[in-house]
Length: 438
Image 1 (cartoon, rainbow, N blue to C red):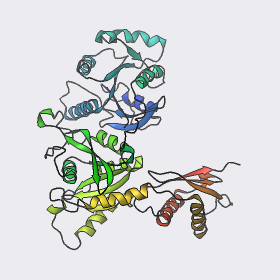
Image 2 (image 1 turned 60 degrees about the vertical axis):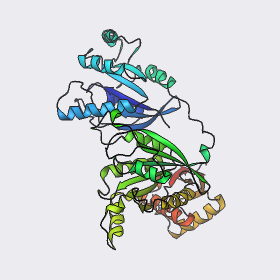
Image 3 (image 1 turned 90 degrees about the vertical axis):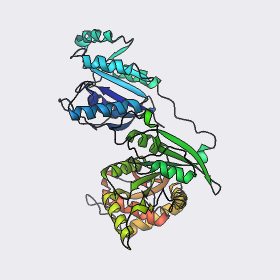
Image 4 (image 1 turned 30 degrees about the horizontal axis):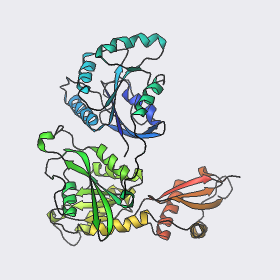
């Protein structure tokens, strides 16, 4: 599980600029206007070969009363709570502000690593700006220029010392099928886990947005071993700190990163939402196998066309998951809950399937001959060799004369035919085109 690093600070101190530099691409919106980043933004990053998840947050204004600023503040508080490491950015050109002092006071109460960066120190002529910030009582400050790069190595080299090495697989855990239960608040994640286990492993109540800690539970059924990763470990009401937060997507990212299969829970009464689609997209980007679990099906009024209409609606709104199986259950009554494990076993068998190289090449030649791609620049494509490079998800490398000549539509055709031919109908597949060496 990757550690989480959150970048926090007042509006317009350069948080998104730092985020984009570390992420290696322009993922966050960067404009010279306070409050451009209102929601948290996420990216998988690494420094010195140590991976982490980076969060960019909106500007934190401790005394804000305007509704949008209050919401941004609450988002930032959640990011602080979820993060393992905090990068607190200040603006060297603005000097130390009362808001900076208030944020620093709040961070002193956090029992986690906090790094204090003074941004917009673009050269020796600006270094004098840093002295004022030592009034915070901080032993070490990191002057840097997020826009141009100076000082970033010093900061991130020290941050990397706090990042753990890749986690070793615990005894027996590597043999377990790891299943993440994810979804929006109040769709029944804890209730489903409790129903599967037959007892209240997690506290289930109808208060949305109270999840913070993932809970792992080993499960054995019919001689097969599983690990349930429940992202709905709801705390007692006395420990609920951010009731305004609608969904803690950080926990979903952490769970997805560790899982073989994600059970994406949908609320039958509410239908599939944009947030459901976003969560499913995170799972697909990670290469995690997905099962769409429609919960609270017992509350629906049904006729002969209800399931068909519902499936059609889900497929329409999540076209990128057209391969993922769908199951309708009730965590409350137990309806069809045991059937979930039949799906898990079936999907996992595909997720870990390897195809012998000789068979793979014979079939791919037949597939290409049946529907060759159109040539480019008056010359035909040359496909040389294909091999399966890994599983979880099944991943293939196809060596060709010029990868840039392969149109995305033909890539989609090949993926669909690989699904049909080799028995991968319900899992994500990755296909990479590699240039054949001369």
